[in-house]
Length: 220
Image 1: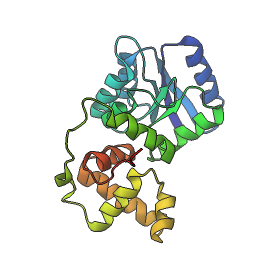
Image 2: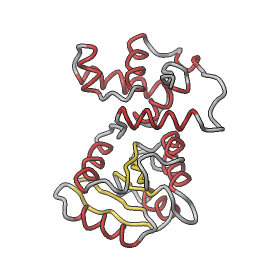
Image 3: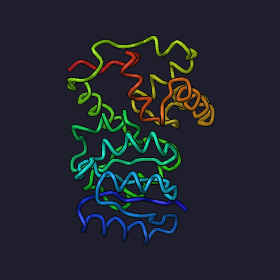
C-alpha cells in the first residue's frame, strides 16, 4: 500500500486529490497539509511514502519544504505539482531532492501513474520535460558559471555512459535497449552512480549530468 501525503493550499483541489487517492486500491491518504511547514510535519511523521507537493504555497513554498524533507526524511519521495508543465522553480525543486513534477491539469490516471513511478524510485522526467527543464536551468541566474567535471572522477566509463543517457531523459528500459543489456543491469549502474554522486534520486542525476558538463543542451 502506497501512503500518499497531500500538500496544497487550495481546499477544493486538496479534497479532489484526497478522494482520488482514497478510491484507489493500492493507495491510502496519509495526511494533508495547507502549507510547506505542514508538509514537513507530514513527512517527519514517518507515515508517508510519496508526498504530492504544490510548489506555490503560503508560509513556506514547496521548494523550501522539499529541501527540508530531503534532509529530514530522505525516504519520502516528493512529487511536485505545478500549474503549468514547466514552472520557474521546478529545476531548483529537483536539485532540492524532488523526484519529479506533474501539471495540475493532468488526468487522474496520469497522477496515479506518477505516484507509482516515484514510489518505486524512478524519476518522473520524460525526454520532452527534461529538455524544457534544462532550457529553464540554462536561463537561471544562479546556475554554476562553469561545469564541474571533477565530480565524475569516481565513475567508471560505463557509469558515465549511463549518466549521459539518464541526462537525456531515457528510462532504464530505453537505456537497456540502447546498450543491449538488461534493465536490472542498468538499474544497478544507476544506483551506484547515485551513491557516488550523492544524488537523492534519478532526477538529481539529470541535474548532475548537466552541471558537470557531461551532457550539454542542443543549440537552438
